[in-house]
Amino acid sequence: MDTNSPNENQINQQFNQQFGSGQGGNQIPAPNSTAVLVLGILSIVTCWLYGVPGLILSIIAMVMSGNAKKAVEANPTGYTASSLSNLKAGRVCAIIGLSLSSLYLLFVIIMLAFVGAAATSFGGF
Image (cartoon, rainbow, N blue to C red; front, side):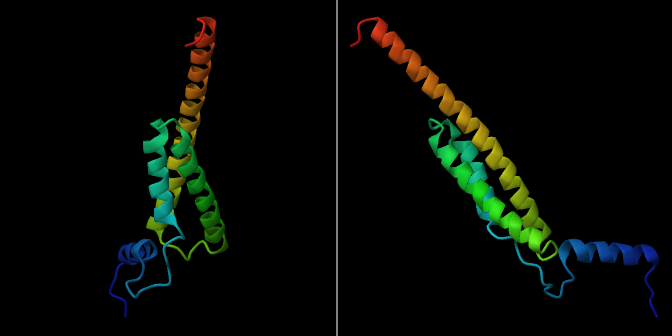
């Protein structure tokens, strides 16, 4: 005899779907989800170092997230929700880091071109 009300059953099902059944479950963290998040954040932080480190870190994070996305698509219910959200957040951070780094690198290249043009127009050093 089930003493739970229909609302309690629904709440229990939602809890088990979100956090597992408490019996260990068969869900595992998505591959490289934490690494993608860390690299994505670092790509934003290091974009001001002439753009190069941020570009490298964001490209690595994008490749790793692409590989993890393929694994998740093969087995969508086999991974924990928190690792999937880490993977999405890391990919978003990597895209932001890639954009900021490329803009800053372009800015540095343009500034070097102007400095070079100004140096040659004033007779050089």
